[in-house]
Image (tube, rainbow, N blue to C red; front, side):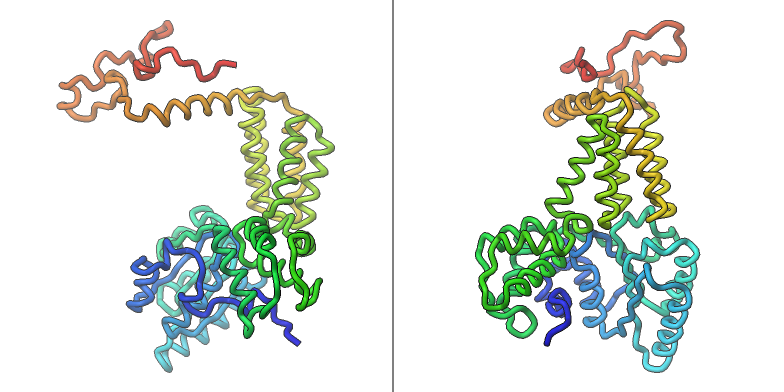
Length: 401
């Protein structure tokens, strides 16, 4: 009886099997060349879940004939790190074999833990490959980041997911082997997987287990499997966005109780609190804006709290921000104003900045009129009359209601 999950069985073993991320591992791309030339240095792989970060680390270790060691930043700490680097040092000394140390969710390690790793990366005891779903600029210490190349992985396209599913269906050795699945079911799964290959494969495997290997997998089977694998919260499928929409609209409608309920639905189901906090931050300016500037401060403070202390402690901070936003006065003036300005900007980028507003750092620029006749507002006790828009847009009022 096969017990290894389909997603693990089907993990690509080389670049030929790998799907997606052509922008970094395609022929002639930097990462592919570094590996081919055996010039590998420490890497940070930044991208959403299920796009191949762990798989790439395995392939890189294999291609460079390095020993592969893995840590989960959620489960591991300094002691396990010391054990791995000690073995890596002995391995390097005895046989000249390098060690690739893969740290999943490296953003979850605090500064002290990352500081403990730094000397081993500096000395080349290990080649670090860190995987993160969060912006490395904010989550990884500068000294470690400066010694690593950052590669950005993109969410997989539906066509990528479709190829992965078809391989799972056809591969008799590692996949599901000759099951029948309707084309519309494949299309549905490719769309609802949210660019996450692991979600797609887990749902497909669940559907097959539910129907049996001889049955035909339909769209209804896929929908049920996606629900049972909790796609609705932690993998950003269709229902996830429905719940986010309900939260947003409950806050917009001033219903704090409903907003709290939808917030709890997401958090208790395993949603990333930072994702929710970012949405609340957006709401504070998009739906409240100048009607109550304090909302942005509240939302930002909640995001900061989520970032510092995480789940489950940060639930109350998010609740505070959500209730505050729900009860606040609303205005979408900033949202609509920016939309009008952006529409103009997209079709008028050829318009030059008026001469009196231009920067004039050199004598030549001053001689040809840059900055000429500009009125420095603090020098005047009365409102200054001068034009700040290109002449073609004179009088445009983006902040009109």
